[in-house]
Length: 228
Image (cartoon, rainbow, N blue to C red; front, side):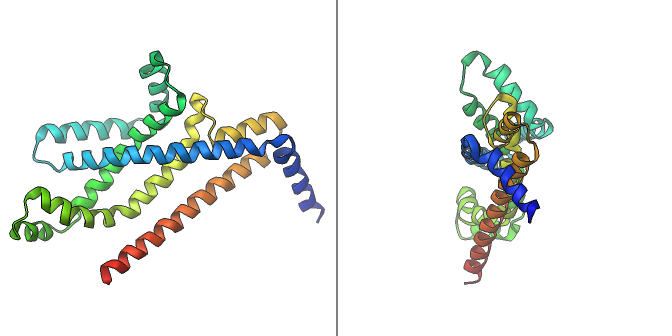
């Protein structure tokens, strides 16, 4: 009993006294906000470049391949610092906006491959059936292939979104006050490492667990709509 009382007292002293829990809320907001904005950017980039990868144009395929090769081959932390300290250094751009752009471009490379695999995973007979009905190649793609590809790619897309949320922990490299940075600030202020670190870990776990369950529910509903 004394052990749990001691944990509670430590938690109260480290997190509650001085209102340090507010730092966690601000960090949590920054983490979710940046991740959501980045995944939206990444989704747009991924959709466009996935179509480029399966196009008949060698130029478009080459551009998409170069992009995915470079972005996937460089760690996000390195990309983040290149964007902030090199590319946008002379513009004085807000670090949060830089973080969104860097994470969005990074996510776009992975989403490109996810969507490409989803599109190419649709049976070729679906395309042939659409063309036989008089639909153009573009109409067949958007009305028949893409809807099926989205359902196929959803589980992997979910994993990418969850991975992106965890990868935002590197944003502290450019002094963005994300969830991980908030834990560091509390640790430095209180000289207590385990309370803020475990708290941050639990919050990350709850976010990823909740998103996993949410997307799993969405997948089941899509599966039922197919059967229905």
